Length: 224
Image 1 (cartoon, one colour):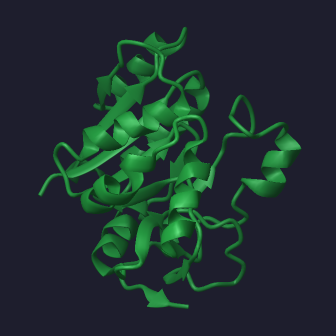
Image 2 (tube, rainbow, N blue to C red):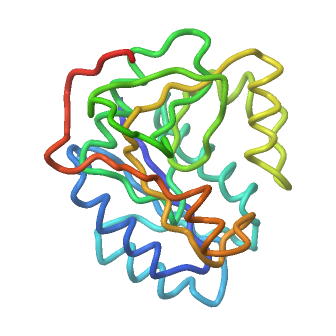
C-alpha cells in the first residue's frame, strides 16, 4: 500500500524549509508519496521552490482555504491513495525516526485510538522507546486511518476551529491518541501562527522540551 504524507504551508517559508530538511533526513522518507499543499499567498512561489528543491510534489488549491479547510484538503488527498495518512504543518519538524513511529503505532493501535500523535511536550527522563495513550488530540504532527476519517472526523469537520473540532469528536467518542513519551516532533512555530500570541507563549505551551535525537532512534517500543 502507498504510504502518504502531506505538509500544509501558507506564509512561513523559513519554518517550511526546516520541515523539508528534517523530513529528507527521516528514516524511510523515500518510501512515501509526499505532497506539499500550499494555501495560496504571496509566499506560494517561494514555498513551491523550496518543496520542489527537495523533490516534493506541490498542490496549490484554486483559492485560499484557511488552515482548517487546507488540512481537510490534505487528508482527503492522502486518503485517495492510502488507508493511513500522516500530516505535518509548516512548523512541525520531525525527528529522524518519526515516520517509523507513525508506522509502528498505526499497526499497533487499539480500536479506541482515533489518532496517532508524533508530539509530546515534556519527555523528561522517559526511555526513548516509551509510548503512551491518552484521551486527547494533539494537532502537531498526526496520523489517522481512512475509516476513522470517513466515519468520525470528516462528517463533523470544523474548518473554523479544526483542532478543537477534532477534540470535541474525540471526547464524544471516548477515544484518544497514541503518543511517544519522547517527542518525535518539534513545534517551531513561535511567530505568525494561529493561537500563538507571543514567542514566550510558544516556549511555555508549544515547544517540546525534549525531542528524540538521531542516537535515540528506535525500532522496538514499550508501553510506559
